[in-house]
Image (cartoon, rainbow, N blue to C red; front, side, top):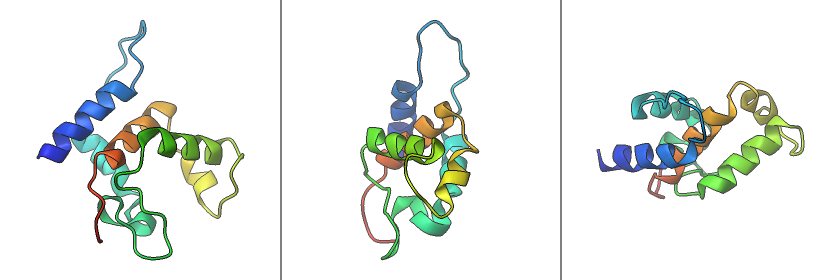
Length: 106
């Protein structure tokens, strides 16, 4: 439960607040989006050998990589396609969720 609170706090800081009343997705929605990453990046971002772990990574680094995939600046096998399925706000929320996870073994 503590991880959910930390993820929600990270999410609140990640989403822009300037002049907009954007709906902030709840922690369970963000967890659901992040769950789509489990096949390659492991449960809660703790990947098996050969895949990049996301748990505990800096939010800004995850956002940058996702934007690079989305904009074609970083080569990939499938991430360039998957990243295009998320808005910038969703990417920031997912990155905040993974940043709040503890590094560990899958």
